Amino acid sequence: MSAQKINKNTSTNWLKEGMILTAGVAIVSSAVFFFLIPSQASVSSIAGLSMVLSNFVPLPISAITMILNVLLLILGFLTCGKAFGAKTVYTSILLPVFLALYEKILPDYQSMTGSPELDVLSYILVVSFGLSILFNQNASSGGLDIVAKIMNKYLHMELGRAMSLAGMVISLSSALVYDKKIVVLSVIGTFFNGMILDYFIFGQNLKRRVCIITKKEEELRQYIVNELHSGATIYEAIGAYHMEKHREIITIVNKSEYQQLMNFINHTDPEAFITVYTVSDMRYRPKK
Image (cartoon, rainbow, N blue to C red):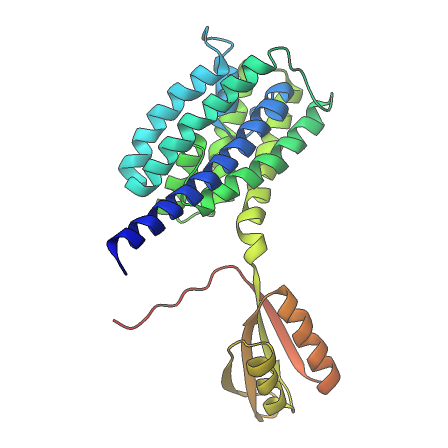
C-alpha cells in the first residue's frame, strides 16, 4: 500500500472520528443547556458543579466549566494517556463553546418541560447517550468524565458506577445553594444517570452464554456452526445423582441468534437442559 493511500485512509479516519466526537459533544451540551440548567439539579457533571459555583463566582456557567475542564484535562493527560487526553482536549473545548452559543442564542431560556423532575429525567436519557458515544471513542466530554475514566482504569470500576460515585459529591454540593427538593433530585438523578450510562455502553453489546445438554447433540452442533455461523465448545459433564456422562455444548450468541437457537431447540428436543448467562465482556488472548 502506497504512503499516499495510507495518509488518505488516516485522514478519512480522523475526519470520521472527529465528526463522531462533535456529534457526541453536541448531544451532551444540548442535554446540559436544555434540561440540566433549567432543573437547577447538580446531576453527575462538572456543569452541575459550575451551576453551584456560579452563585459565588461572577462568571457565566460556560466560563466556569472551561476553567474546571482545563484543570481536569491536565490530570487526564497524566493518568489516561495522550490519545485519551488529545480527544478530550477537543471535546472539552467544544462543550463550553456549544454552551456559550446556546447562551447567546437563547439568553432567556427557561425550561422545555416546565418540571424539574421531567428536566432531570430528560437530561439523564440524553446525556447518557451522548457520553456513551464519547466513551466508546476513548474520549470524554471532560470534567467529571475524566474522574470516572481514571476510576475505571485504576480501580476497575464500571464507568456508570464511577460516574455515580464521583457525581454524588457534586450532587451533595447543591445543598449549598438549593433547597432540599433539588438536593434529593440531584442525588437520585446521579444514581440513575450511572445506571443508564452503563446500559448505553454495555447493554447494546450484551450476549448470552448458552449451555445445552441434549440428545440431539450433532444436529445442534451443525445448526450452531452452519446456520448461526457461530462457534461452540463441547465439554464432558457427569451428573451427580446417577453419575451418568453427558456432553454439554456451550455457545455465545447475540439477542437475535439466541431467539433462533431457542426456537431450534424447542423444535428438535423440547426436553433439552439449558442454562443461560449474560455476557458483557469477551476477550481473546493469543499465545505469545
